[in-house]
Structures are given as structure tokens and as C-alpha cells.
Image (tube, rainbow, N blue to C red; front, side, top):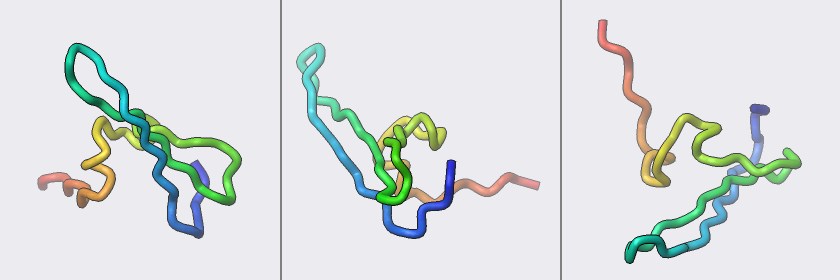
Length: 58
């Protein structure tokens, strides 16, 4: 994935399944012609996007 010199734009759309509300999430870099999904960043939830990555224990 390329470096994005600008902030990423977050696109979210709610949907309902099994009585619960979920959100589709896509990230878009204005200078990169493709959407980036959370799985591309090895993330499962939108909340993880702003989380500080864990450092490996030594």
C-alpha cells in the first residue's frame, strides 16, 4: 500500500444483520485510486484504526 501524504477519508455505511447494526468501512486516500478496507490494514474493527499498535515483548 502506498504512503498517503494526506489524511485518509473514512466512509462508513450501516447495515442490519440478525437484529444488530454493523458498519461497512472503507478508507480512501485522495491520491491513491482505490479504497482500502480494514482487512488491508490487518484490522477487524473501526476502533482499532486509531489505536496505538502493540509493541512486541522482548
